[in-house]
Image (cartoon, rainbow, N blue to C red; front, top):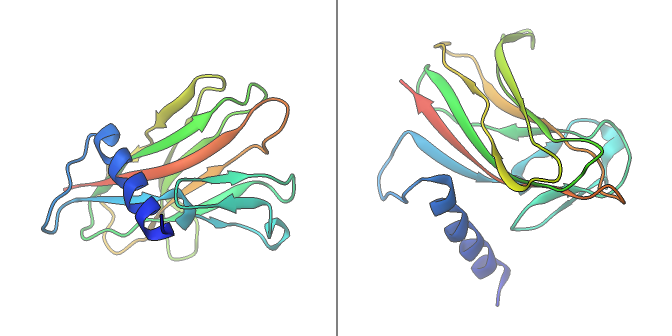
Length: 162
């Protein structure tokens, strides 16, 4: 089975769990795989493992912060539904959706946390206000995998709020 086929099957399996139906036309929902998220600092090169099903932190280097892209078609708010696995009893995944001013300071943000030992779950931060022309992103902080358990980010469903 090719990597492309495995990726298509993984995404197809996650879409129903996120409550989204695939559509053949432009819509206000976008689904991103976790592997699109990038390390925040240079000290984290090699700290994360990516594949078509998830991203996970395997080395305790840097601060564990990931920046995940969000593309929007309008100036409204955004609601996210981030599919994660968290069995780490020592620390949780935190994810924030944010809107940034041109100087990088936050115009608005909301942070939500996973629950360690709960296994597969959703984290759902949102920003409901409209911000014309300002970029949006999702930032997650992942604990390193180890004897306390593992953390994985599988995918992220972004819904634009008009």
